[in-house]
Length: 372
Figure 1 (cartoon, rainbow, N blue to C red):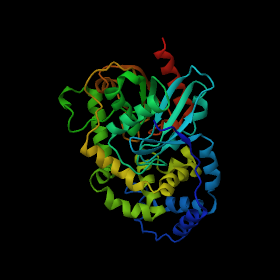
Figure 2 (figure 1 turned 90 degrees about the vertical axis):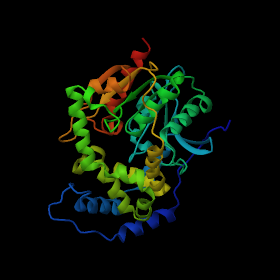
Figure 3 (figure 1 turned 180 degrees about the vertical axis):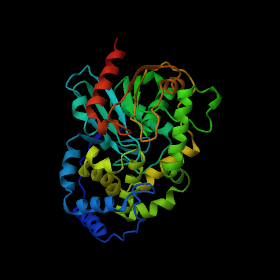
Figure 4 (figure 1 turned 135 degrees about the horizontal axis):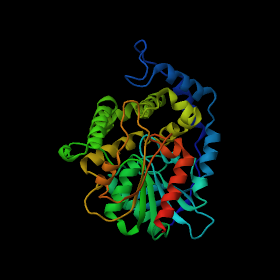
């Protein structure tokens, strides 16, 4: 078995100088008058963000903060895997696996790692193909297999709780199907969406309203998903060459989750840029896109056997025009294994990042429920 080794993020100064040059020499596109965010990332917003990036943002400060989280690397199944590991001082604490998606990163959880480590042994991996893990894009089922082995074989945790959103939800649900024996339970903010495989005739009225809103969202904002799934390499050339192009693509998705101009208020420019920097400095934009094509070729196993693994769902605040995930859909997707269901009042798609106090409290409540 390969043992984990401590990992320190140390970006060469030459790489930062190259980034600054590219930012300063951006060739900006035009924009229709009063475009807002309706057709993609707003030009005026991105110019302001880039100006801040050049003149005020401090990567070395961000790098020190990331290193303080406790980073490790290990090779598992031929994959170079990065993860944060913050064991609790309580030796009997419950192991907790926190899982991110796209276009966020392990950085999604930086606001909750310390507070959760009071009650949990916290593990936050970078999904293969993202961040400081290797540029190996894998379908989510293989990622679930990899993380099950990371927790049990590499770190020696017999059973654990998984928690995540977006891709992290998919991995959690895959873990429940493929490795139920190692899961105490899982906590998610979404449970998959109605699609072409859904029998709409059996859906309740709240589920039908939710399905209609999801369909409208995909029409308005879901183009990235199809591009990543079908032509990830074509997109990769631009994103690996232009930091502003990469920032525009990431911010367009965050706007599509109802953030838009409110992004600075919710996250702060420094944290938005740090997340973008993780993709830029590791050159993982291309491999992160390929995860979608991998999943298109091998659909994740998120339904099937009723494994009886307990589930907690914390629903996102809907975007304007959206519909909140109904309890009926959560029960349907998890074979009726939801034991805790709460509607978040402040947080959207990036729950732990947007409302760390609620997220940490909801996880603690779920863990206490599992111990009864």
